[in-house]
Figure 1: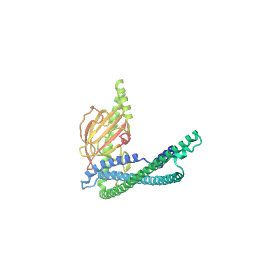
Figure 2: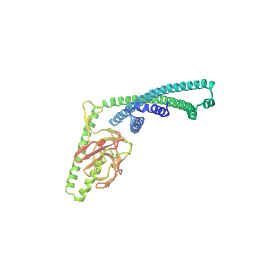
Figure 3: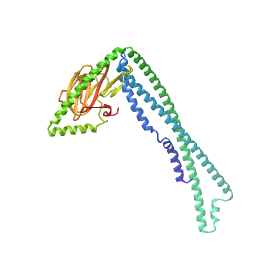
Figure 4: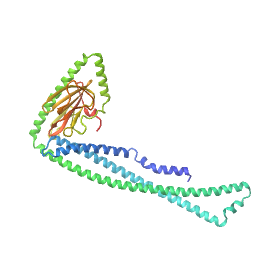
Length: 396
């Protein structure tokens, strides 16, 4: 086999794994997804640890459990993908190993035949007599080149055998490593499955406890609807007032607002979260109540469960338009960003004042409690249109 062909063979063998698993997630993609999801699990677990200390069940606790169950199930799915990917990699390594073993056997056989022919020839004629028996100078040169090429081929054959043997050894080491990794990941899946079973058990107990307090839950829903309605009316008044003011604003002020609106728009899916640690416990829009059947609940923003005394910050540069108190939602801060508005509800305390200019990341208040959990409601409005805040916040 010529050196170029041999090199191509080795390259093909080493690249076969990546070729055969194309179309699937790469190892890097899968590991990144597992790490991101693990971070979500840890954030939710920190909140869940706080709620678990409380003996009474609450909707907030149930939402934390539901979020953690979703994250845990996702992690198990990712681990299963990992196991399947490792299995394919092991199968490919085993196939590569067989190819290399066959190649090594062929090279050794070929080399043995070469040595056998050489040993038979050496008994009849040596190199010197072979050269001096030449009939002409040109014949002598040709015979010398033949001997030189023969010696060179033997060296190349030995080099190829050593290269394939080394490659085979590397394949075996890689195979052993993959098998060890597979065993670790299988054990990890078993551990995560036990965690999921425990979470579902807690979820079932919490649902049972809450279901036995149906009257209380219905009162809470009614109170929540009133609070949401008050907040909705408050924001509508704020926006109306702002729109009227902008229409009569000086040209330079209108330009500033237009630029701020465009800047806010350009940061869609990039805005920082209003709290450093936390997770979305209730999403935007209408959905089924987590306990009561045939009961719908609505959310004009998202509820974010967080840690005690969590700092709440503005997600973008703007001006504080309003600070109000709403029963059931504590303190509410509304900030204008040109044609856009962000709302931060259920604050225990407020650290800004009306008409104050703020920058992204500036402290505006401290998170309050709701249903026994530390939680804020965060909303995004484009004038009178409610936006899904998850479409604006950076992925977390």
